[in-house]
Image (cartoon, rainbow, N blue to C red; front, top):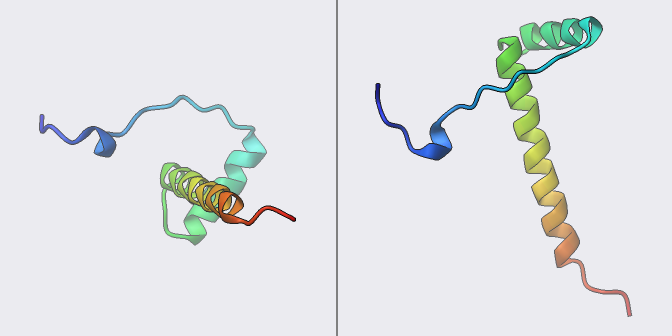
Length: 65
């Protein structure tokens, strides 16, 4: 088994979803040519990036005088 840097290793996370949410994600994944797992990972990655940008811009705003 090859040794990957820790940041490249994948973690397994059990996840329970409602049937309707799963179906919506499955359709979205199909539309984007991804697996359901790939779609969930993509969406979570985008949300984390957005959150980091939002936090960074909030700390860069000048204080009101």
